[in-house]
Figure (tube, protein in one colour):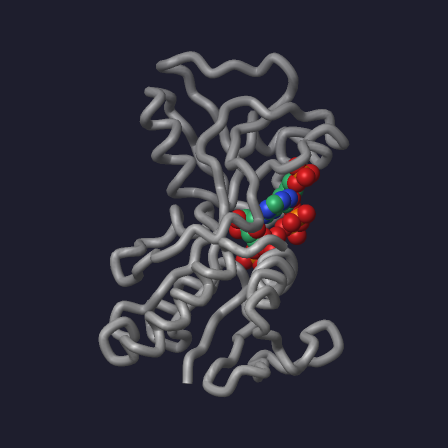
Length: 210
Ligand code: ATP
Ligand code: PRP
């Protein structure tokens, strides 16, 4: 049995669309069921539906053999216990700094940053020689500069509509983000043939037109 961990929402939707190209689909709709383990029409394959930021943890501990996680999430996680065999090119966005129009960071200056990407933000501002005080939030980061909690935020941006609706602008690009297939290292050894065949199938799905 192979277990693939996905997060509900855009990653689930886009990953299932990708697997659909090679005829794999869950037999339970997570929007109509409270089940967190979803069987599939492929014998020997099931899905786990969990929080996006929990996917690397499930895969590292072997509770799932494989998972799909955004590069933004992986950058926050110590990924030494994981393989990352494929870029799936789904859930694409950019991790950026954002703030009010005209905000500029001078080397040597101090800045207060609200984000859920604490490690990445620390690394980024340190690389620019800017002293950053990082305030950890779990969502709605765009609010922080509006109410004086922070000077700027680090968050993912796609269309830019969320920033615009809150009077903020994208500033600097930290990284391009897409979702990756991740793999438990022990599963690669213990279930080698199964895992390799599945990865090859996904690689094939990526080559097929949607
Ligand atoms: P959690 O539930 O753990 O807090 P989340 O709410 O960030 O996670 P999603 O919003 O489903 O979960 O995002 C999952 C992944 O999709 C992110 O890690 C990122 O890689 C990507 N992503 C997030 N927002 C967007 C967006 N607006 N457009 C495209 N991709 C996005
Ligand atoms: C994400 C992210 C931004 C928004 C950016 O939130 O946290 O708020 O997308 O996308 P945009 O540039 O196209 O506006 P999401 O919509 O996933 O809601 P969430 O806060 O529940 O993750």
